[in-house]
Length: 422
Image 1 (cartoon, one colour):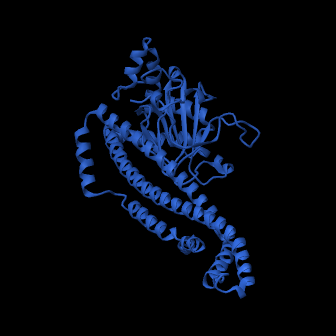
Image 2: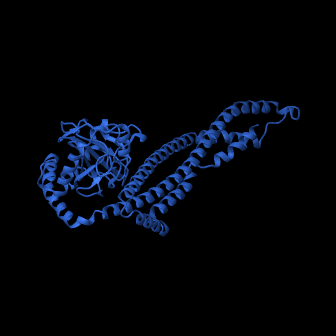
Image 3: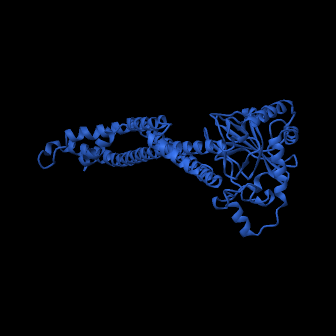
C-alpha cells in the first residue's frame, strides 16, 4: 500500500509549479503575432473595398452598416474585458496553488523520504526471524505513524496538482480565446474605419467652407471662458453649428407619435432628424462606450464642488458612439476638456463627450444613436482625471438642459434590447 502511494505521488512531485510558463510564452507569442497583423490580409482589404463600393451613395445602407459594425465592436470589447478578468482570476488561483505547494515542500520531502527508506529496508517477518522481533515491532510502529500522515499529505498534494493542471489548461484556452477576440476586434475596427472614411467622403461637397468653419471654431474656443459661453457662440457665429441648432429646434415640432411610430422611427437608419424627442428617450440610450464608472454625477469633485458629468474608465483605443440622435455643434480641443464633442439633441438638450484621442465627425453633421463618433487613446487626456488614480483612458460624459448640467442616469438603457439604435 505504501509503495502504491509512493508511485502515485512521485510523478506529481516531479511536476514543477513553474511548468505552465512555457505554454504561456507560446500563447503570448501567438497574441503578439496576431496583434502585429493590424492591416489585415489582401483578401480582407479587397472584401472591404467591394463592400464600400456597394454602399456608395446610399446613406441609409451606409448608416446601417456603421451601426451594425459599431455594435459588433462594442460586443467584442465587452468579451475582451471579461476574458482579461478571467485570466487575472486564473493567475491569482495559480499563484495561490504555487504558494501552498512551496510552503509544504519540505514537509512532503521528509515524509516521502521516510517512506522510501522504509521501502528499501522492509521490516523482517516475525516467523522468519524471531530474534528481530523488537526491530519488527519498531518498524511496524513507525509505518503506522508515518503512513496515515503520508496518505493525507499525498492526497492533498494530488488535489492541488490536479487543480494546478486544471488552471493551466483553462488559462491556455482563455489565452487562445483572447487572441481570437483581439484578431476579431482588429478586423471590426478596420471595417469601422473604412465605413467612417466613406461616410466622411460623402460630406466633402462643402469641405473648403468647412475648413474655414473649423478654424473659426478654434478661435471661438480660445476666447470662450466656459462650455456655456462656447455653445452660445458657436451656435450663433459658426454657420454649420447654427444650421444644426436650427434643425434641432425644428425637430421638436413633430406631431405626437404612438409607440409603433416611435419604434419605426428609431429603426430607420436613413433618418435625418431624431427618431423621437430627447425627453422621450429616457431609459433607451446606449452608453457611449464600454467601461466602468469612475466618478458618478453629483459625486464630490475634490475641489469643494460636485461632478457635473460621469467619468468612465474605458479600454485603450475604445470606440465612442453617440448616445442619442443629434447634430454636431462643436468638435475639437477645448481647455481642460481636451478633445471635446458637443451634440445638440434638440429640445434644449446637449450632450458633451470629452477625453477622446480622435473625433471622427464634423461640424453640422447629424449622427444617430449608437453611431461611431470618436476613438479613445492610450491613457487619460483630461486634466481632471489626474485625481482618479488610473492609467486607463477616461471618457467624460455630460448632459445639459438649457445650459444646466443634469443627471444622465435616467436616460441610459437598462438592457441591450431597449437601446435606441438605427
